[in-house]
Length: 149
Length: 153
Image (cartoon, rainbow over all chains, first blue to last red; front, side, top):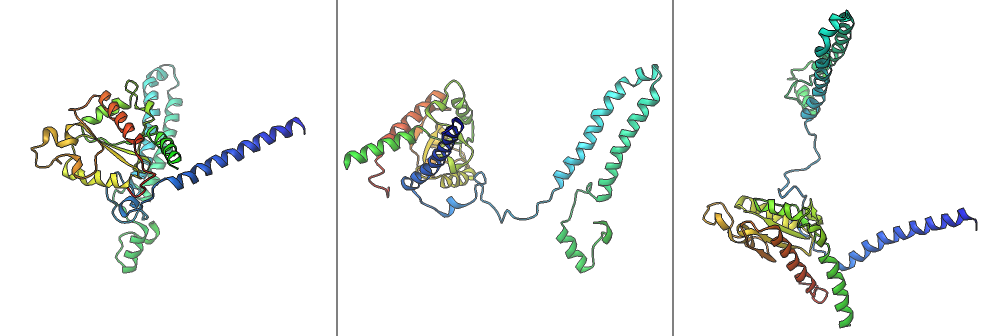
């Protein structure tokens, strides 16, 4: 057998032993451990609280969206202040138009983003889930035009 | 047969007492001492005792601190959610008997009113060394258990 073939045998033996060890210990534990399922033991662990209802429903993602929008403002502050700090020096050296145009372009991009989330209604704190809107539409008493959601 | 049982029990108990995983649970100032006991000076890790964030993996519930009636329900549920064999250390006077707040309308007068306690650890709060001693006492208790012979216990 070649040197490489022998090396592969080592690897395969190692893999098999690893698998055997995992399943053998789990199986061993199956025989020696006590097993006493109970209603409270099987209940969901919520840090000692008793869970209310089911976990499988639509969560309102308002905090997530607000956090994402915050990133736009955060980046705006982080990049605008350094420019403001050196702006007078750039004015004195005659490059004011360049710095101003660059900053304006940057801000316009961010403002477009803000306009987008505003138009989408992501800045509204009170949101309704899709099935709420459908239910309201079915009753004919929705406040949102059909083309806007 | 007796010899085999004894040696198997010794081996299994040795494994159990060398890996006492305790639940991350603290309700008052004893919790600060509990954190110190897990830190580098007292180092509960050298007994194989490491904190776990879920009762499913924990063997030991250290009730560190005052338990109010409102919290008692939670403590009981956490104890129920731990897998057997499970142990409880009542750490500090409050967990033992209500301690300083015994006269309060809202404080549980001893955690042994709601869960079975294995080790009572006095002190207000006990030093980390005292908690290490409690762990050693618990190891002693574990190593003497003959649970293979009465599986129903």
